[in-house]
Length: 91
Image (cartoon, rainbow, N blue to C red):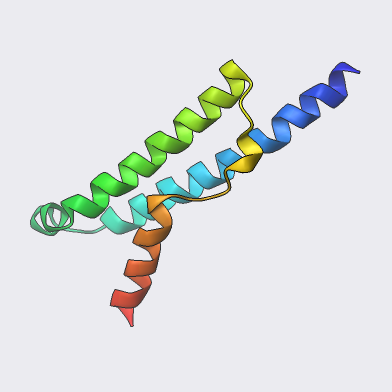
């Protein structure tokens, strides 16, 4: 019986981990090879990306520590809007 409970916990956490990895990769790709001045110019997008990562970490912690329902929240939050803006500027 314990294995089934663990599987029910691990699957949603793995989903959030995948989101977290995607958010971190997006932020890394935004900063890789960018000069300091350009980073400062994009400071707001960097802050939004960090906030999205922080929010994802808090959701995972809430699920683990407080038994929250992580499955109800499938959004990527602000990180998805950053990705959309980056796609638009590359065109």
